Image (cartoon, rainbow, N blue to C red; front, side, top):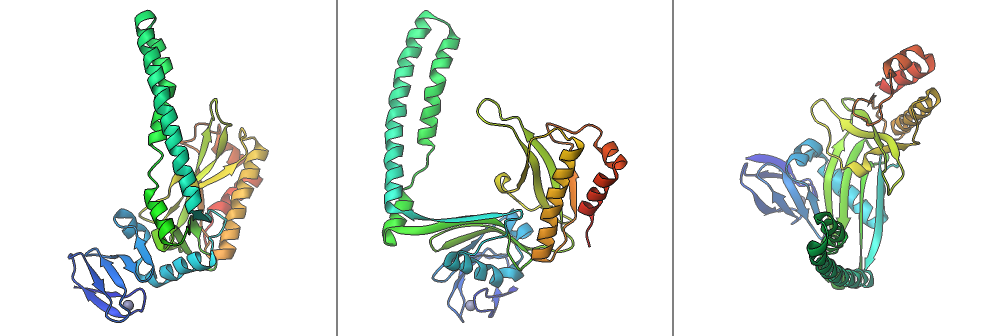
Length: 319
Ligand SMILES: [Zn+2]
């Protein structure tokens, strides 16, 4: 048997260990989804889901359930946001018309790409009889690509049904980052009355930030970008984070002294702002080893330059 607290009304409850089921709280009648080990979902007039599996145990502390549910309500009702330092959040309204418009576009694009594919198939056969194999590939690739994109667009029937069910439009959003005036790091998405947490974890002095330098050349279709990806680390595990919201972008440069100064000052500013806003000083370690564009002799530069090594020390400091 496992003793837990109802996250809605704090009633003490006893659930059978290892036997998954949905239980109703006798006090507040919330439905509690029990995995046999943790609560993975709570249903009142809203549905709160806590990502199960690996992320659940590493990123979610069951003692923070009440705080998590309060936060979810604040996000849905009052558009509460996470700090912009190492975080972002957004929300928007989805209307029935917008979904129908997108479905129409998808259908048209699907029709176009199918016709395009048929034409290129005919051309391919003609080329097969006349010229080389390479020509067939060249004329098939764009049409196959269009076909894949048009069918990979996803089905929005469910969204449409939801919008129609709730009167024509609903709200949705997502975010990840630190919650203002608390030391909690969270990652979540929500749609109408369903709020899904990927993480909700109190950050303390055992945690640190590990930054890894990155550089992408950009290629033909984009400009180069560089900066640092970051990960929150405790003594055991790195918190799960999708790549897009764990980046600090900097100007593209070649690690001249002034560039490194700017980078380090920028990162130190983020660290200081976080310390002021969440009350936790996170030591920062920067690694350059895995970057496509590694600075040469970075250790030597850091050691021989008093200003740079002073900044480096400030970044690494905890408290
Ligand atoms: Zn309860």
